[in-house]
Image 1 (cartoon, rainbow, N blue to C red):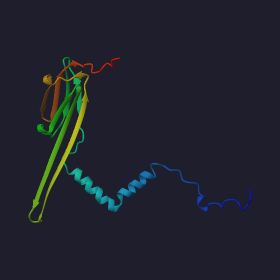
Image 2: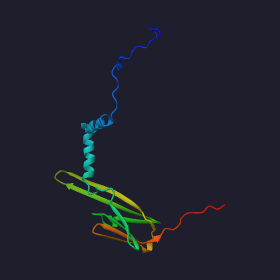
Image 3: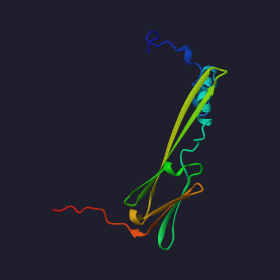
Length: 165
């Protein structure tokens, strides 16, 4: 190869490139970004908005079991009012939805300000049962923050459709 046609050596590449370590590179940069002053104030206000609320849960625990004659679903819903619980039944599925609403009012005449905040949170769980749910025979009770739904064991029906020739 001619000396004249040889590509000039790239002086910027004298050091071998550093291997990219996920934990040191990207995560470290993200930490620096979110700890910097302009963004820290925004994140603090977002955190305080959600931490100041009594609506802290996004899901709720559910226990599903059966006795000799029925299936039982227990859901722990402390602090929830009965009218905020909605139960839907479809075939072998049971959906429990909880909608929590909270309003805060503050009026300080001495400081000359007033605010009114509203927060709403919805959480839902769908439970698949090995039995068909019959609405007329299914009962739900709610006492001391515990929802219990009971129903008789009816075998699942065959919901498949045969294709004709």
